[in-house]
Length: 84
Image (cartoon, rainbow, N blue to C red):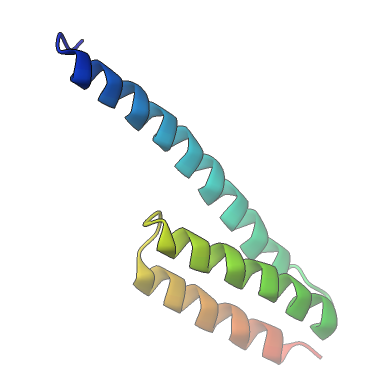
C-alpha cells in the first residue's frame, strides 16, 4: 500500500475508473450482440444505431482502440445489410 497521500488517492481513482470502464465495456458488448441477434433488417438497423453510439463513445473515452471501433462498425454494417 502506498504511503503518500496522492498515491493513495490515485489508487482509489484508478479502481473507480476500472469499474466504470468494465461496466461500459459490458454494455458495449451487449449492444453489439443485439445487432448480431437481430432477426429483421429494421430491428438490425435500430440496434446498429445504438451500437454505433456506444462504439463512438468508447473510442472517445479511450476505453477501446479506434481500429477496433472501425472494424466492429464495418462488420456490423455488413451483417445488417445481409439481413433480408
